[in-house]
Amino acid sequence: AGPTAAPRQPQVLTEHTDRVTGLALVGASTLASVSWDLTLRLWQLDAAFDTGAAAGATHASTHVIQNAHDDYILSVAFSPELGQIASSSADQGVKLWDVRCDTDSSPVDADGEMCVPEGKRGKRCCGVLLGHTSDVSCVKWSEPLALWVTSSEDRTVRLWNRGGVQVGEYRPPGDGITALALDRCHGCVIVGTMDAAVRIYAVAPDLSGESLWPFELKLVQTNSGHADAVRCVLHVPERQLYVTASWDRSIRVWRAYSPRTGNGAECADAADLGDAQAEEHDDGSDRQQTYAELHPLTEPKWLRKGGALERRRGEGGLRARRKIKPAEMDDATSKASSALGLKLLELETRLKATFTEPAAKPAPVRRARTSGEAGSMRRAASGREPSSRSVL
Image (tube, rainbow, N blue to C red; front, side, top):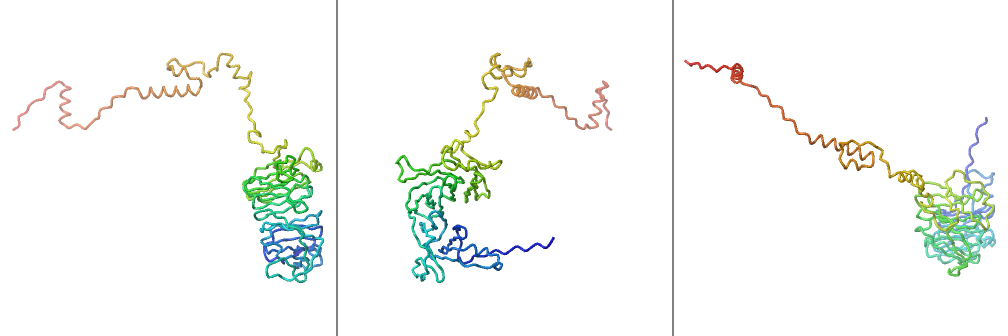
């Protein structure tokens, strides 16, 4: 075999001067990027993927909007139906940009106003979404609902129509929103929160008239299993799955929400998940099932009507395992109803007998005798009196 060709060096887009925080595909050949450097840039992917370009070559953006926001830009999305790019920022707002309307370059403003640098073109700002009270961390376009969906550090998810008017608001539980995604089949809003849960909300018109907004978000599914905050959610409509990534260093796969009626029938026929880990509420309820509901207790057979316990009761009570009891055991022993109780009482009886026996007399202590004591004992044994001798 011939030598393996060296891998081609990637093309580099390097005009941003601070952290790049978001990417969005605009059509088939344009890429939008946003950064902490407060710029929105558009790039032509055809030039970036030009096979004739030198390895590692850098490419210039075609459109640049400097000072697009007053604070860090955090997210970007594109609506093909409206032909608009949405950028969200820490300045608590979302700006809409018309991709069909170019603007000429404008001089740099010392006051930090929006401008287009020399030799570049820009895009016209055609709307602003205002209402959040903190950083707008994410913006998405819902194609099934034709609505903009935003999430913020103010712990709310908000819905906006194509005219930039807010039409819905909801505050999910979980002490802060950490991820936002949309179900591309049914238009459901998928929210990841700090409590490590993934909640799916169906968007529907408010028919009760009790809400302040024309649309309401109704909880239809809750997926729990992560041990830390969920930071990314992905919908795979071809497999009817949700994929989530968390700070607990794990990626989990769940069955996607599937309503019994309504749109999204094409997703209901997708391939089955198989052995992948998943959680789903088949009844479509708006609450998470408890552990007792998922794992109900089953009555043992011997406790059921007609079981072994009832048959024994019919025969005159529970029968003791040991039928013959020692006659020497006391009344307490005869009342024991189990083999373990009989064994313990038998052991107690033996221990009592052991410790209550009279103690044996101690053996005499033998000591060494003197020669005089030894002679006296021999004479006493022979019956003779000791003789007296005079001492001269």
